[in-house]
Image 1 (tube, rainbow, N blue to C red):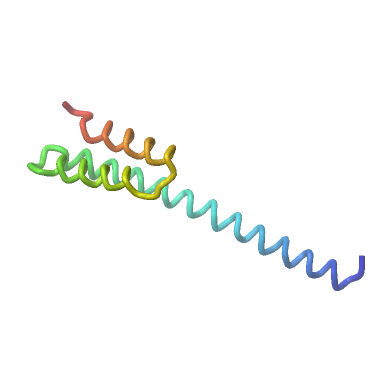
Image 2: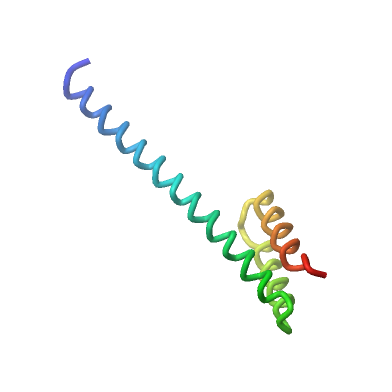
Length: 86
């Protein structure tokens, strides 16, 4: 393998590693946002009209283009947090 090909492969490898790092960071940020969202839901669960608004949002998510498995998981986790204290 000549030096030019090897250098190009090294550049591609560096790009791939960088993308993996970005994906891992994004995943961590999404997890943190989810924890924050659950905390907000728990804090406001007793506010009049809040549950209805969250249910409407869940219904919109379920009707959207999110992957079926992810939709179900989001809906279950959100509802569990919403009704936790009842």
